[in-house]
Length: 250
Ligand code: MN
Image (tube, rainbow, N blue to C red; front, top):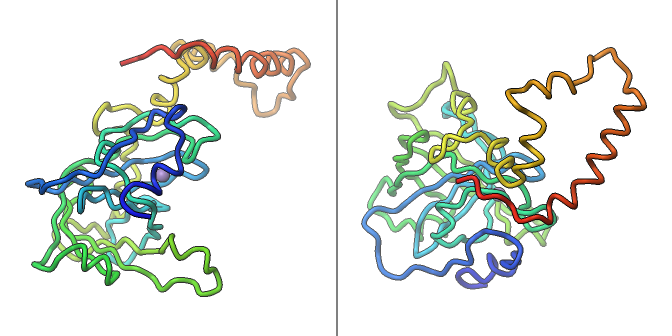
């Protein structure tokens, strides 16, 4: 499928707040990069490099490592529209990618050499410079050979994201990026972004954590009948609160 057809086919824009987007025409001065931390079925990092009017995208299954010896699996996913680069919020459950999306890093990127990055990607080896707020320096994306035993996966090529040797490596603290848990745009944690969507439900549970500490049962305590009842009531109430128009928190 060409352009954003696959992106659009996977989504119901009547339900999700994600942008429908379009393929951008004309060259931009500096190619943008965005990394969205996405708390879906599994927490992952969506790396998006602006190229050819769209964001070429990979789902990186673990926090990028600053140690060149540590390779991260990066699953190629469909091209995303450039409008997606500012998206932070919640994708409704049941929708494609349902979960919370956080703007984890933004900036620009550039190919390291003179070669055409589109051709490099076609060849399966792109060396690039990251000028993000958190991810910086030289990185490489290297495509793995497709698994012949899984022909259906042809559209989901597996790549490796690797830190390259430069002044930005950190072998002593390769997991430093794991401590970056807030949005670079809004400073919010994933929990805060998720909470903003269902303001009422979320806030009632944590006025400065007072109610939370009361409600949290001691490890040794067995759940009482009363507590069980409360949980059931909460669960039953959920669909009702969801239907109410969500309060915009920003
Ligand atoms: Mn994702």
